[in-house]
Structures are given as structure tokens and as C-alpha cells.
Image (cartoon, rainbow, N blue to C red; front, side, top):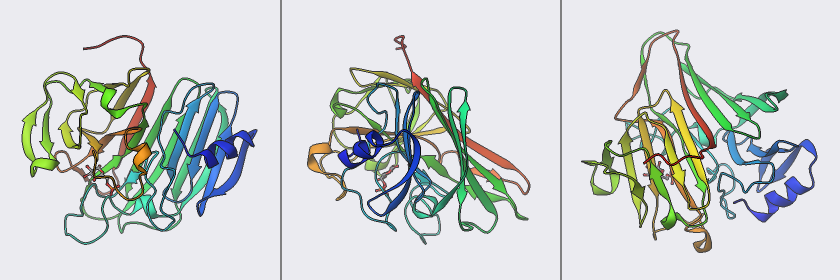
Length: 289
Ligand SMILES: O=P(O)(O)OC[C@H]1O[C@@H](O)[C@H](O)[C@@H](O)[C@@H]1O
């Protein structure tokens, strides 16, 4: 589900074009394979839909203007997830509020598009990120690549903080986390184990220790969410206490499922090394649990 203004931009677009929305510079693609909207602010994917389908991602209709982060789509949490370790700096890192450059848009790659982005300015002394997005009628994949360009090992935490669009959060079932240990952020990081399918009934904020693929079943559609380079899966919904940039009428239109590297599995990157955090989303047709 995306704001009407973005739907109108897409309707007025054939192929690809640049546009602006809410102070953000966008790349808008409406092609035979499907649709995609990408904001340069944050290197932030706001929308993806295979042709003829309802969008897979939710984006708020009342976003804050830059330099604030936008809620929805897939914000990039980098080079830290959550609060910074030293207490200095903004929640979820610098990438989601930085300006990113679109380095390349390759059309007709596997029947869709491949987009390469990198930050306009340096975001870290020794780590350099870049993002690759692959989209076609069958799948959406994202790779957040981090290269170590310095001299000493560095600790990295991060997330692809995806907001999935759903008709009713309370009807969703998340399959594939059964047996995984998790930290419950709403209970002072108490540790527990997930039993069976995860349903959402209210506020939820958990870091699951898992590298397994999941299925998000929203009652109408089943999406398979696979990942690499990540042993943490964060599941978040604010419940009734909505952040100011989510209108009440959209409260149950999303659920966040975030492939991540967190305090459970920080990456220690050595000089010259590279880490890839990736997420691969595709339709799932068979029941798993
Ligand atoms: O409001 P923000 O900074 O976008 O964060 C939203 C949520 O993001 C989730 O990833 C965190 O686990 C939550 O604790 C947090 O509240």
C-alpha cells in the first residue's frame, strides 16, 4: 500500500522517470514487469509491485520531510542497528537519512531491472556501503554490500528494515521462526524461544536468532523472505502507540520483518574484507508449518 500521490506518479509514468514527492527526489519505474519507486534520500526503496499485483511494501502517507527518515518501504539501517553502542548518534545509523546516488540502472536484466546506489558523501571512516536492487515480475532482491577500506577491524550492525504491506496485521502469520531464541525488546531484552507460527496481536519488538527463510502469510498472499549474511531477524509492530508519522487508519496495514545483523550477531569486518547482507522476496505457494 502506497500513498495516492505515489500511485498517481506511477500512473503517469511509462518506463522510468525522475520525480519528486514530499521533498524527496525519486526514481519511478512503471514497466511491463511491474513497478518500483526509489528515493535518493536514504537510498530508500519505497514501493515494489509485480505487474497487476498489490504492492509488497507499505509506505506511510504522512512522511516527515528530509532530513528526517521516511517510515515505510525498506529503510537502510547502517552502520549500526538500534541505538549506537557509544550512545552518540541517531537510532538505526546514518544511511537512512543520507543522500544516495544512483550509479546505474540496468534494464532488461533477467526480465526486470537492476539498480546500483552508493552514498553521495562518506558515511564512515573505514566502511563504505553500496546497495544493489534486483526487481522483476517474480522477485525483489536487495544486497547491502559493505567494504572495509581502512586499517583496523570494525564492528558492524545493520538491517534491511522492510515494512511489508498487509490487509490486517492481526491476521498475519509468520512461519519459519519456530524453535528460534529471541530477545524481547519490550521486556528489557529478556530471552525466550518462539513456539510454532508467530502471530501479531499487539505491540511486538523481537530480535530472533535465526538465519532461516520465512513465510509471511497475510491471509491473502504468501511471501517467502530469504536472506544471507544475517543471523538476526527482527519483527516489529508498534501496536497502539503509533509513531507520529503513521496515521491511525494505517495502523494495521504493515508488519516489519527485518533481515539484520544485531547485538546477537555483529559482523567484525577485517581490513580489505567485504560483507553482504541480502534479502530475497518471492511468492510462496506451498504451506510449510
Ligand atoms: O522509529 P524508528 O527509529 O524507525 O524505529 C522503529 C523500530 O525499528 C525496529 O527495528 C526496532 O526493533 C524498534 O525498536 C524500533 O522502534
